[in-house]
Each structure stands twice: as structure tokens, then as C-alpha cells.
Length: 529
Image (cartoon, rainbow, N blue to C red; front, side, top):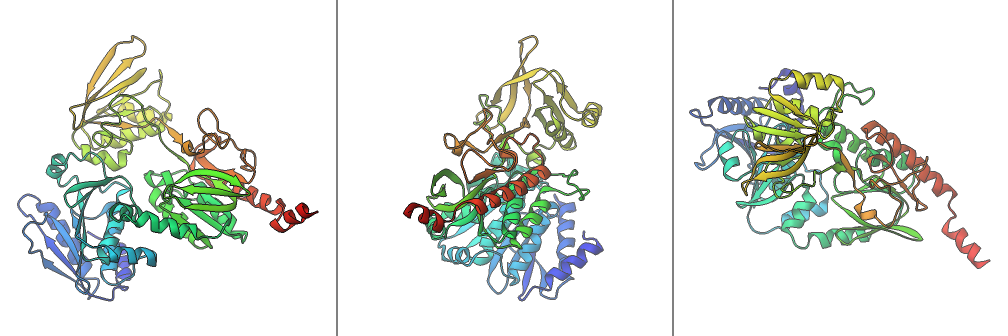
């Protein structure tokens, strides 16, 4: 299962264990012989690397098979992996081993105290696909709760391996989290968001903590590439810098392959985001993740109001809230979102194994999605609004050569069709003949571009008709002291490396503004005179 290099790295990590960890293995040699052999082999290879890890047979009769339960003997906590936790979930397994074996979790003391104080029983089940890049963050967040509070458990479930459950629960999007048998959440979720859903006082506690913070010199709203670059450049100037964001990494965390980041031949979104976060943490930057900005005002200082009611103030503000997937805005899309309508082929593609799907959009993202899905599903239909594909020629050639990809041009999607529970097809209009046609399928992957995250700024700052923030050469906006960078702005090319450059440029522009802005003392002197 593990090559020599990976074993060496894992052995080094396991040196951090301080208490006994037991791996309880449940196998099904009749129906899941191959995967059962893999999970047994993986568990035994791990146990060989540390005297504090041992493997035993699972005695619970009701547990999913194959599975591996990671148990802390000292603290009586439990984390289960139903399926073989490789791919993106291997990191989740490593962290589960370390944290169950006494290595401290990397969260705040306030979060630890709040998790310990939770009463009652919380049994989480997290359905994932091993190719999903969003899933590990959710699994790891719930696993952290499980190693701190023995009344909380989490089971990662590989949806492609437990298809009957996926069908029974009508799961068509990952990650999907169930709590005590009921749907709890879908998509990315953080520890703070989880706590706010199960602890009614969590938001108020967080808001009070944020309200107590002193004003910043530069406050960055958004934690993607532009925000991270701005934070590094600002902190290096020695000014008080903060980042407030819904999640660190932004849209990049959902990017599978990155091959045009100069000096790095190939990487993926989660790796790049991890590097960005570590780089930012090397500096004195106050990172306030899991917070959504809802209002910007200026009354001397610039104020950012958050969804939980907290108010942050700063002498300058950098807006780097990025963009999100554009929706089709047709009947049925919202009804079947997460029930056949998806926006991330890497995350949700494995749930449609052997089925027929459509991709909406013929740009690079759409054709890349079609090529990826073609290796998993039975058939892919690409619908492009224009009379020609807009993807790079090399991608077009690959798609046209595939025997299970059909491309329909001049097609306007008009409705998502379903049976009340899940998608069964879509209708589209042939723009040349005006004829309405229908395609039967199980999933629709929407890949038609991005929408800037600026709804909360309308009426307060100058935006284009497309909703992008208008910026000058130094990233300045229509409000003095407020700057912007990255995909949320009028920057014409939405690329990671360009967003980083925009962030650095705007941070320098903001610093120059701070240097030239009159201090409070001099302003008071002028008023007195």
C-alpha cells in the first residue's frame, strides 16, 4: 500500500505519538475482498512503524465493512474510516493517528474549551469521494471534535464504495454530513461553523471576541491568493494586519490541477493553499477565518460588519473576496442543487460512476470537466451556448477524440428536470431552429464562469455592470483608504498568479496611503488651529 518514501515520512510523523492508538479493522472478504485486503494491509503497515500502534479485529457487528476505527486508548475517543483512506483522505488518516496518540490539535484554546463543554451525543457520518479536495477539510474538522470530546464520533464514508447508502440517502454531492442520522450540512464547513450549528451561543461568543480587537492598520477581507499576498506584503511593512475570511484559500481549494504557476511545474489547490497559509502564519497576521463580511462603512476609520454581528475597524481595508461559480438561473437548478446539479466535477464526479451526465459550458473549465468525467461516467454531453467551443485547441481535440463525449453547440439550457428527489434530465433550446429538446441524464455539472462576491458592497462602492470592483493602478477604489485585488476586481484575467500580483500591488498602494494619510494627532492639531 505505502511506498518506501511514504513509509519513511509516516514513521517520522508517528514519532510524535505519546500514547497508545488501536486500529480496529472490520473486513468483508465475501463482498469487498479487494478493499478489505487493502485496509488490512494499510493498518498493518502503519503498526509496523510505531510501537504505540497496534491492530485488532473489530468486534462491533453493526459497523461498515471494510473500515478502520482509530481509537485513543487513553482518552477513549474514536474516529472511523469506512473505506480505504487514501488519495486526499490520507492526510485525514495521518492527523487522526497523531491527534488520537496525544499530539496536540492545532486550534485555539477557546475552541478546545467550547468543544469540551458540549454535552449530549454527536454521531457524525461524512460521505466523501477520495478525489474530492473539499472533503478532507470537513473530515478533519469533525475528527478534531472527536479527539477532544469522547461524546463525539465521526465516520468518513467513501461514497463510491458504499453505493447502497448513497442511493438510499439520495446523496449526490460531497461532502455530505449527517448528524445522528439526519442531514447536517453539505459542502465545505469549518470547526467554527460546526460549533455554531450545534451550540446556539457559539456566534455570540465569537462576535464578542472579535469586538474586543483593536483597530488594524490594514484589514484584508478574503483569504484567497490575493488576500494572502496582501497580508504578507502588509505584515512585512511592520503594520498591524488582519485577515477576515469565510475560509482560507477561497476558490483555489476547489482547483484540481495547477500547471501554470510559474516556477512550480505542477501542484493542486489544497497544496498551494496550505503553502499560502503557512507563509502568512510566518508573519504577525491575525487570521480570523470562518467569518463573512456583510457591510462596509467609513466613519473616520473603515468598519467591516460581520454576519455574526461583530464589528472590525481599520485605517485601511483590502477587499479580496474573489468569485464563485456562475449559476444557470433556470427552473429546477436550485431545487436539484446537490441532488444532481453540481459545480465541482472532481468532488462529485465519482458519485455518478457509470451514469450519463452533462457539462454546461464549452470553455477550458467545461472541456476539462468533460474529459475528467469521461473516465468515470458512462457518457458526457457538453452543451455550449455559442456556435463554437471556447476551450484551448488541445482540449477540444481530446474531447472530440473521446468516444463517450458528445458536444452540442448553439444550445441554451432552459430547465433542469427531475422526479422530485433527483435530476433525471434537462431541456435545451436549439438557438438556430428554436426547437426544444430533452436529454436524459443523472447529473449536470455547471461550468460557465465566475461571479464576483460583491453583493454586500452594492451601493457603497463603485462596481461595474458585471459587479466587479472598479480599481485604479494601485488597487484603489472609489472610497479613500479602501483597496481591492484579485478576481473580485476589474482585473481582466482571472488567474491565481495574477491575483497574487494584484494583492501585492494593492497592499503596497494601501501602505503608501497610510504613510501619506494625516495621523490622528496632526488631524486634531489642524482642527484646533
